[in-house]
Image 1 (cartoon, helix red, strand yellow):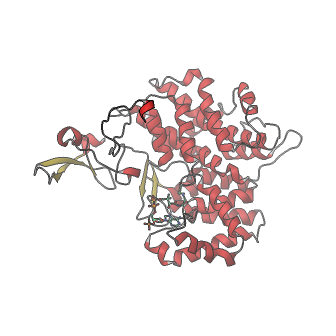
Image 2: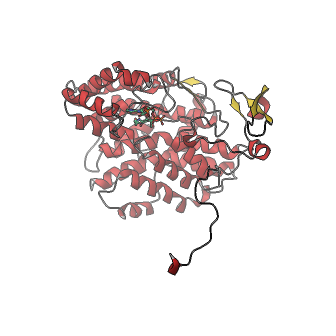
Image 3: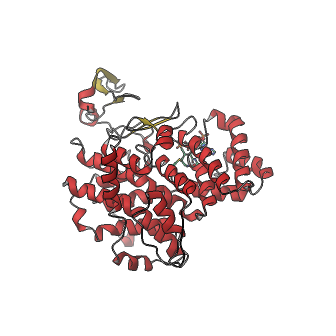
Length: 437
Ligand code: ACO
């Protein structure tokens, strides 16, 4: 089913008060969620554009991958609720689901894992590329550059009109992101790069590359790799958010997949998006003690102060972020496993959550904790440095980006993304020569 087949027997009638003309716009229905008014003919018929900065009321594409009901706090990947996937599935299975639309059979899963795992190593030449960065570079900067550079190495997966090329590029990106993330970390601390171990599961291998060294044996703690796997599932896709829309927009011009994902990473980096997990931890450290929380809550409510409570609020969720609920539970499991019974940052986080949820300002604006609120505490407990938090988000989200990118490339109604504007600048005026200005 696509939107064209799902034209509702209804129109949206628009009356132009300037001319008195009326226009009937078709209304399209998805399988669930709000209908959309199809404005594609609007400009041709009315000589008007729609105006929606921040796209708060705009559906940019048709998609079958992820569904969110922000009022109810629902998140579905291909129809499956996120809490069921987090509880019963694993990240590789979720990758398969997002890419292919169905959960894999046992045999399909084995083949898929084998196919992805085959690509975990980087072209050796990329090691030298890493060495060109400053050691104190932010790992997101390193990741942006390195992922973009993959297009200079993997020429046999750049033909986006070939489904095989697209799938190889997708597998490569999913497989190489943990390797790049761990290398960015090792480089920043001056430690040797660790090659991936293909007998380990995805999350396990990532922790191995992060924390092992060539001199000693290293056993990955299964509770921590399970928690990491769950965090990857929770972040795997989130429909048309800023970074995914960036990937789609970059890809709409026919750009290669590595370049598109690099653009997505750049967008994710911002503190209003994926950068929030790093910002949450910095904020909790700045609060320092539960006694200071009220001061920070008051700052967040002050209209004249740009400070916001990091990890609170979401463009779509006006209820509990369902991922935050799972994350909350995982956080306690990880701290329990590591024997961390007295984590001051967690005490601050719990008290901050309680105060904010009781505060009229946050209640009225429906500002609930989002997925980033607890992920930072888990990462910190695992020994992952703060600057790497958003990098981990990028590792997890890569499958969502490539699934959305593939869907876009295969969509027959796909066009280059080209928004219009409300121009408020100067109208035509005569050029004034330099000497007369
Ligand atoms: N603290 C204090 N006030 C807030 C917060 C917050 N965290 N979030 C929103 N508000 C207020 C705004 O000031 C605004 O108030 P107003 O109506 O009086 O002007 C109102 O709530 C609505 O906020 P907008 O910025 O218009 O909402 P938008 O949907 O554009 O923003 C966003 C959503 C960017 C996530 C915002 O809530 C925010 O900045 N949160 C903190 C950063 C964060 O945690 N980001 C992670 C998002 S989840 C993710 O990307 C994985």
